[in-house]
Image (cartoon, rainbow, N blue to C red; front, side):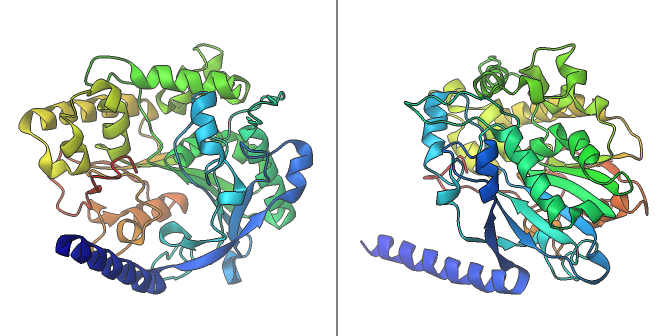
Length: 400
């Protein structure tokens, strides 16, 4: 009983600490619903309107636009999509009415020097297929709507009406499944904003790779194929890929990025915590839970498990090699056990943020976007980087 009480006190104190930190480093932005999108069929899984959070630009940033897409995994069949339908990842009715902006969305010059006064938007994710789906029919029994591609179009159209049609600078970015969105829709975004604008894309933790899990199975390849089939995504994936490969493979960045013409920057951990947990060692490939403790905290990994993770890093770097080394494509690949590093102030820009070549993620992205200098750095293998903020997960919530 005493231990339980102490645990509650510690959790309360931690929440207070987070609120104090947020007040210093972040701020809340209210939600905007795109009500007129419903008539166009551009809706979340449950048929509710799409939404975003918008903080208007000021001063010299009034015609600059930073469109950042939320992450949240995918659903690959009716059962998993129904499970999402009644959550914030499937219904705008379940979304928080305001969210915190920090990191690349911060409005403070000292915390986000290159983009603090831009129009900054966080697009909510409620379709389950990285905004690629488009199935006209709606099953009356499930009432599931697979309309992610329409949602993406509706969001951009709404932002254009609110001033993005006058954009001088524009970035499409995203984290995790949103980072995959920024890859798959990069050229489309570039075609939709004014031709005179300087347009680039940024993918944070969106470079998911096609590799075998610890049992030797191609678990993620099968999963992505099911996502594409369920959502009718094939027609909205890059044709430069689907013309030569099966649509399911075209959900993987490694088969798409070499054909992207719009400049793009990749921020990723070589030991991405989501990929280690869900691609390399998913529960289905680890029935006895031997990887459970390791996935919660990389410090718990055995020497053999670390060897396997080094093998994953090698696979990741091979998949990344197709990006090439041109100034239009940048990368910040650290050796951290992390996932999504641009949204959090501690990893975007702070005195103790992760660095490569003495450069933070914020400076690398800013220098690359404004053509001050290219950035194309891959970290040495774990555990060589002492600036990493390695994720540690709670035992009762290991897959967040």
